[in-house]
Amino acid sequence: MNSCIFCKIIAGEVKGEVIRVSDRFIALKDAHPVAPGHVLIIPKQHFVTLFDLPDNWGSELLTFTKAVASSLLDKKLGDGFNVIMNNLEPAGQVVPHAHLHLIPRKDGDGIRFFTKV
Ligand code: 5GP
Ligand code: ZN
Image 1 (cartoon, rainbow, N blue to C red):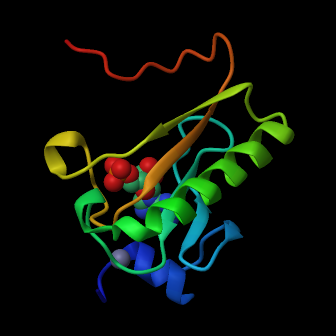
Image 2 (image 1 turned 90 degrees about the horizontal axis):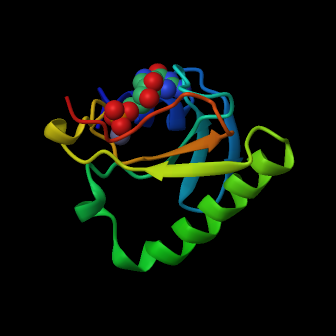
């Protein structure tokens, strides 16, 4: 998809800090991190939501996500981490190219998810 910002980053048309790659995925530093080390796990191919990701990519996604999370914890960016995926606009998806948020966490960092007002 030509207008997709993540496709442009993957194609090298737009700058992005890619910290790790696998056959099918990249780990990209989020441009607006909610915590130091916040990265996005993004399929190199354009899919919109979790529903579109092929089931047989699941194993690579899990292995890749674990490896990236381990490297963030090894770098002392967090003592724990969240993996979050926003699917479609009502759930907060802004970029319509499927991605996981990997967010390092520390005690008392003040980050709150899933609050209801
Ligand atoms: P969503 O709400 O779609 O799950 O999150 C999209 C994420 O992509 C946001 O956290 C946002 O900061 C990040 N983002 C949006 N545009 C860019 C970009 O051009 N480069 C990078 N590295 N991250 C981006
Ligand atoms: Zn895309």
